[in-house]
Each structure stands twice: as C-alpha cells, then as structure tokens.
Image (cartoon, rainbow, N blue to C red):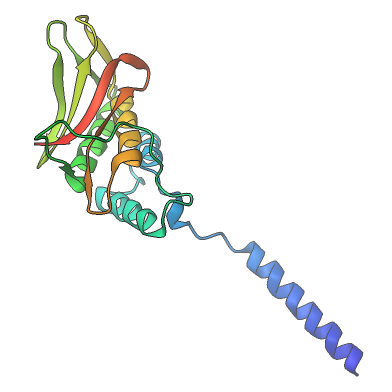
Length: 180
C-alpha cells in the first residue's frame, strides 16, 4: 500500500512537470531591447509593440537590474547644455523612422551640411552628422536601428535618453538622440 502511494505521487509529480514544460515560457522583463523592438517594427509593423509598450518594457528591464538587462554600448554623455530627451518622444521618433524605412525612405545628410535632423517629436530629436563633406545616406531603418542601440545603452529609468553611435551600414554618419 505504501509502495503504491509513493508510485502514484511520483507519477503525479512527473505529469505536473511535463505539463509545466509544455506551457510557453513567459517573456522575461530582462530581455527587452529597443534594438529588437526596431527589428520588430521593420519586420512586423502591425504587431510590433507600441511606443508606450516599448517604454514599459525598458522600464521593467531597468528595475530588474543589469543581469541580462539593458547594456551599455553607445556614447551616452551630453554636450554642455544639451538636455536629455524624454524617452517616449524619442521612442516615437524611432518608431517613425523605422516605419519610414519599411516604406523604402532614405535618411541622409546632403553635402555641405554637417548635421541634419531626422526627426523631432515633442522634446526629442534624432540628428545625423556626417564625418566628411560628401552626401551620406542610408535607409531610414538603419537610422532607427542605430537609435535602438543608443536607447539600449543610454536610456535611464527616469524615462530620458541621450547618446550617440556610428550608424549601422554607414560609418560616415553619426546618429544622436538628444533633447531640444
């Protein structure tokens, strides 16, 4: 009798373990990435997270901490007197540029112009600077991808962001997110 009870208990435990393994894993709050969010907008614009959902995901990742959370890569310091951008406004710019790129739009800086604003929304701007005096342009997706990397490196839990990074696929362009 005791042997049967142990066997039934073991069988029940195995069945519960098997059913738990069959459940889909919950999304971990430490896995959020603005760069991945941009890729989602580019590949699945109709089902990608909204700007507010992206900010909430970043906030959850920052609360959990650095283990698997947002990682530093871009230059996150500011020029003297340059304010940090509100995260939601900057994320709206990233969303806008990613959607433009999905439509085939090109973002760039014409010759003779050292910088050009790619997007201004609310208190945030995304600006491209060139390192030479030659026209430089990329698909707007690449500007959005670069801005996603800046977000992953430089977004703060107070919902502000500021930073810069060399543009993906164009080392002659430098992308900056800053406040106005």
